[in-house]
Length: 614
Image (cartoon, rainbow, N blue to C red; front, side, top):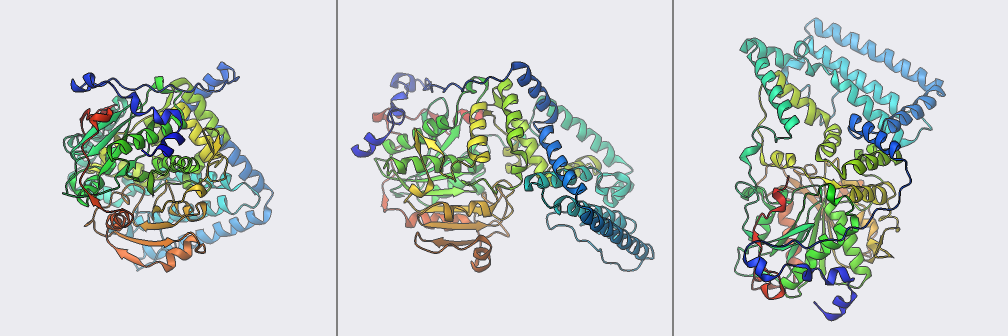
């Protein structure tokens, strides 16, 4: 590491390598883990009785704040009550919809060809089979969709109410009717009725057994049936490599080269701390890690420890300092001081962006490029997740986590399932319980069930500082006492958004074009938050758009950008690999696995031990 850079680093970074175990413990295959000193939480004067009551409320509601929901309905209801004109409009709309439904039902009962008066959303697949085009099932579907359309008008057209409250009311009034959608019942689902007749009801018996099995697995916290086929280190996460660094928070994996020469700059991948890293190293056919090594890159990846109650005081800065910065320190030693292509996925991208900004603020130039995969820095338009984030909601979560010491994976997954309840909840009910057919478990689904926890302090700081207050995007986020901003960055940025992402909407990711003063290459790919990223060459129906905005170019709004940027068929992986190669300084001999002479001997084979923690 150059002397001027080393001197610029805070003490915890420069000491990261020194925290490794002695060589005698490594040679025996057992490493003493480097310890991280947690930062104590600030004093909290809230009465313990109040905190415990809030904990009980959160446990009973799945972590959803009843006060936040009540406030949303009160705001909407008060403004609706003061809007007699809107009430008359909604009454008129309701009458017109009843007339449309009556005419539709009359034509459908007569057996004539009839076109529906309301078309489901493109992502709504509940009524797409041929059976729903037959009477009376087409009338059932039509009546439900008209009701859904009316409620959307009633909850979104009220003037004067807070936008977040209206969105929350709209979301809740979509969830409640979804319970009673005709597709969810045997008597009103033509596909279920046909299957029941053809099998003499055996499908319902299988469905009941599936339900009992799911209930047992839910209580014992087992993975879904079929996930056992995807074992970490055996069928997934099998790209050859070694753990070359370990502390209390991370294992750093270095992958073996597969080409005679490699690009001089290694690639560091930082996944989100709420996910197991192997989403980027699933099977060999869809492993981004394996693909990068085949393209001549030396790849390192961070594998996060699965925290427990003892880690409750680990905060955001600990993850930056002892996660990202410790990994960069280790890679610098292994790669002989070459700069690093740093890439972060989801919240890992947000964490990496803060670390890179802090490095720029300190004149630390070890990063060559910054890639952000479905990651955000500005959370004002962070999609439907914002429905769950306000002061009431965050406070309730904090009190729940204060009792537990962490946010449990089941509590996190529940919120994500609600965001896509049709796909993740009700389609499962119909297929597994009514039709009696198990949906095949594939590698990405098995990975999704292998969830992690989050330390209470870390999650609280992330929700308050980044999500609720938007401190990073608005110039208030501090690292080591210094305010940092993306405008400090001078390295090229490669930002990737996915078209149907409900976690990091692509228009939010696109904001890197206005948050930074450097060259930004933005790529928009088909797919969602996970499937859009895990998109190897050869995946059917994949495409992307890509364009670069130089530092002195004028800003183009996202909708204009999408309309004017040509579409390219294929995987975005090839475009990114070409971009990285173009930003590299040349080819060289592959580095050794680890750096034993610098205290970085390989500790064990990939996938390591932290990824196996439950």
